[in-house]
Length: 306
Ligand SMILES: [Zn+2]
Image 1 (cartoon, rainbow, N blue to C red):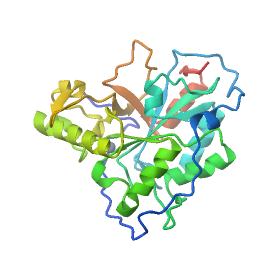
Image 2: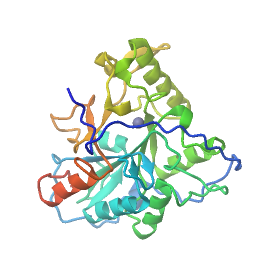
Image 3: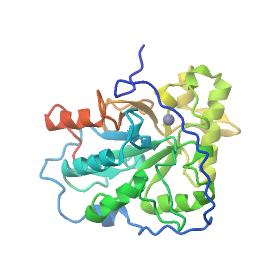
Image 4: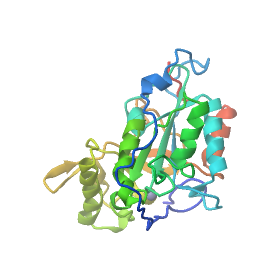
């Protein structure tokens, strides 16, 4: 069976970061924390659309920031364009956990845009030497956008590889603090981004289980959700439902694919927590622009908060 990965192209690549920083380890990000309630509820409905709890949810998937024809990249202008278009269409950001709770915190009239960033690439979260968020990373661009769109605050889920978390290793704790303050969350993308199907059960369990334990050490509440590297399940799919690893039962909260269509809300009978689809942030078939155009032409009915 062919894999549907979105944007008509193949598979994710792993970016190994060799970037190190000599910046101080305890730099303090200069970002103002904001709570979901402060930012999302101005009292005014986001749109005059009727509530639609059965509508589809856009779970967006970003990898690299940069100019390239490779569908793993989104240019800064394209990312700004995504934020602008989503905002105008009545989307508001939320995390994977918000989605799994039923998108209950969204303001009336809003549709959820679940932002996910895979592979913990350095261009996702980058700090300046003084600890402030750099302008040439996804979060820096988004932070800039929030200055003119305070009701579109940074909310995202990062599916990370614990050993390659955004480079700048000496600034890791500052980045984790910043993400926590912003209301972002971390989730599991395995230890080394393998094709799980090619591994023995034991190795597949190590990849998922060890990453989960590493996330727990960073303060992530178990169970974490899992994004499958390349969207490929282990040969033994039962592993995704749970297994024992080092005396602990590991069962991903939900399992996310690479492609390639809007997801049903968790209340839908179509929701399958072991196969949650996402939309790659790229041009071409089944990418973000394709699906937003489908919404504009009324071919996709969105979830709308009531
Ligand atoms: Zn990946």
